[in-house]
Length: 193
Image (cartoon, rainbow, N blue to C red; front, side, top):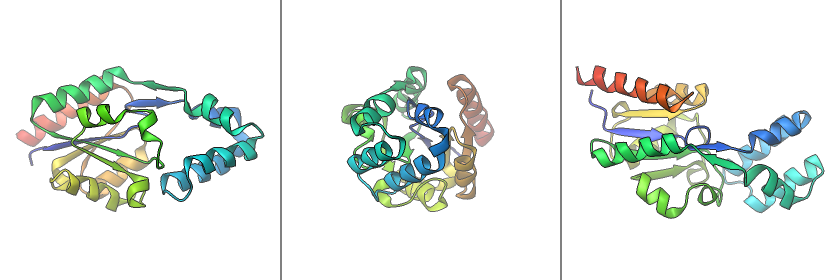
């Protein structure tokens, strides 16, 4: 089986999110924060509603939620450069598959970056499914015009890698860019053997 598509998760792989600080600052509200993030990821609440709900939950201003926890994100330049290399090679279609609410992604990757880096962008809030739902991985493969077994999914959460594998994709649990690249090379070598 030849690998034709590489699909990247956004947060925790390409973008290191400041939102993890929200959980550290308010561990007693972790379950409620997670529930609100899921509602946003599914497209059930807007970004404004999300910020307002978090602010009410933890007792800070909505603008502070945005500035302290969602404006603080770091591009993983090593991983982004790897995406560029893969796309320039012309060997693979490159996808982005992310659990993210409407209106959030553009703050982390501009539209120009999205077009430059990816052949297809699939967001949970646009389709009403979140990873690790097997159907979401199948949608991503279909949008890339490849079969799931021709795809490699790179994600920082084991549960999402399991979902990708259940969808018949190869999966790489991301820890570092160097580690993920090495595993990707191994998968490509074994698929071409």
